[in-house]
Length: 143
Length: 376
Figure 1 (cartoon, each protein chain N blue to C red):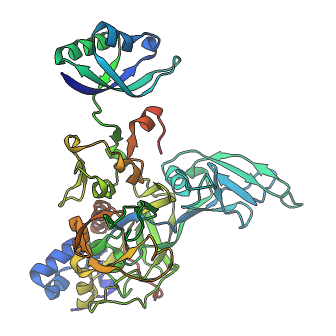
Figure 2 (cartoon, helix red, strand yellow):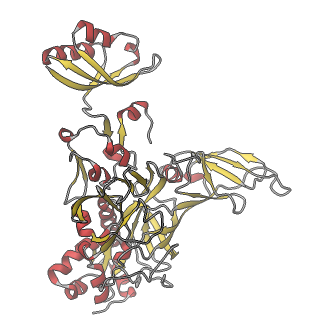
Figure 3 (cartoon, chains in turn blue, purple):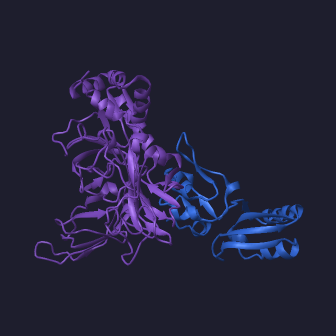
């Protein structure tokens, strides 16, 4: 069994299809929806954690792709927009797991997902809106 | 070894000036000595990029038909000060859209949006008088359509600053220095240290009224001493203040500045502000200026202050002293314990500005201006 976080983008044409239901019933994948915003008249986005045998998950994702769903792997509950980052290092100073670091030579901020424990403290200390919760990002609201 | 402002300016015009950043000056003086650094270098560039709350813009929108004398005004919903002549407005960086509590959008964000070319919504109200009969207007405008937009910052570039900690409260404090964790679990600082303009000219020998500066990505001037300017603060033997001391009043044309160096900030639980990028070029007039500009982070002390009781209660107490070398290492020792440090000021941003200013001087596109009066 493996579990994997996926960000699903639903184009307008498949917003009314029961794709997640097919993923659960048809493919037998456990789906834990973390955040979602789907509006029948617009495109939708969903952050979900999928659990099941690797092969089964792969089949499920192929099925989604065939139906026009865009798939990306955020692997975290926030988005770091490096273009908006000023490299003050406030995130590195509060990150309890060392996922955000500041390079001792360049003083530039770096991020390594493998250390992240999804505590979201970095979102609070980023004054520049460069680290946004997936929820805010999905909602399209820039701080 | 001495050199004059005029000699340096001639060298800039001829393209033969030797200019290095304050970081490079620190390294050069450490390797070759202050005397040799003085002999080799004409100009040292500095930089800082940090939230500076005492900032704002003075706008003139041009007149309406019929004429309207603004008495109250909001820009993108953020209140501006209209107690000036008819269509002049001052928008402060910390003015908030939501006046009932800490807001996520305010003056700093409007300034960033303006300088990025965004369209701003103005709502203005007047009393309606014989000469200014208009009572309200709601125009939209972009920066280029304004008659004037002047960045007017009454207190910038604080010469040294507190290191903030939470020593006594059991809950997280939400301060302008960011979240401070209980039990001294973090320490927040906000200063570019060895790259900071006023720490490279601690006695204000070359930075004064009329100094031309890099401001917000464009050109600006030191127009006066800043509010709370305190040149008499305690100093080290080398002349470096041991806490907040000098401040500068900065002015420049917003047209020509860049959103890369003027960024709205939103500090959770506190409010909003504006991060400002500032750079200054310091002429190495003599060995004393060479010594000042070769200051290193380890030689700049910083006072650690509790923000749970001492700072809000104005107790004046300092928990201990540290320095910017330790702060930048990521942790300091406080009461025998390791405490993680958090920077609010972007050292990478300060370095970028000092490099940019160096390149501008080398190209001859930035010329130093000798002050007409000192700020002290």
